[in-house]
Length: 374
Image (cartoon, rainbow, N blue to C red):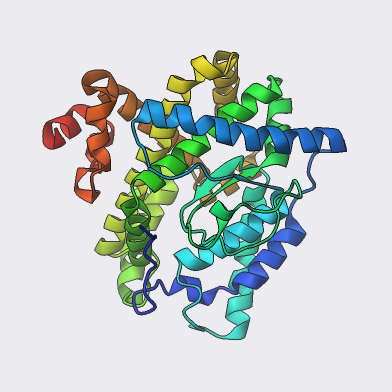
């Protein structure tokens, strides 16, 4: 079953205000230099990540009970510049960026530059991702110089990307065993691949919510200003000294229409479930295949909670990284609780369709999801 694309008529308007090719060009120029490594270390990391991605699939399928019925596809091992190229292509698809010019050349270039700057910032921290919207049409080689396999062709949407310079940088920072850490990272990312390929409706569900969230064609400027003013008045006495996850989400909701708020809730809940489920699987699989998993988990969690410089904290909050960290923690607690009570087989009812996904209030109260769905 192929991932359904958002039609041109219903495509989000935001994507068509961005010059995506220019965004990728800007991002590649702004990408921070990678940590110095020898050619031997680079080749070793690429080979180990490729092998770890293959090794992860079997244990992940076994623990989750999600069998996609498809052959194991090769991961694509990339550097930071290759990642921003792939990410910009995916965002073009997700946001309807091929739907034609919705604005002038200058506007598209400005928004392209802004988007490129964001992609460059993200590229220095992301370890890997499964992109369910990738068409596999890029026939380029992986960072290891190996040709893409047939499983990466356009007939099979979705692609697993692993950013090897960032993996090397983090494992050095954490002072952990490289081979173990690379396998641990792959367990998380391969879980996302299994989630989407075993449940093809997930990608379409994301597309539909994103289409509503980024469609500003029906937004009334006066109503937006009114909602924003009300938000400012309500928070005047308790405003934070700097942006945080809750503040940024509150600001987003203040300027959104009701359908957009509902779409944002859908995306946040889905993201929380996906990330929490992947973290649960990492820990469930980890001890059997990753000897130093306890040390890796402890040091990785410490890194997540480490205090950042003020400017970086502001940027991270604006880009939603704090909310992302909350997704890992809250999502894992939800999955841990439900699986401990009903087992993984009954938990998997959550993947039936949109109606069985947890509601926002149920994420922190798993018993309510069990009562409603099971």
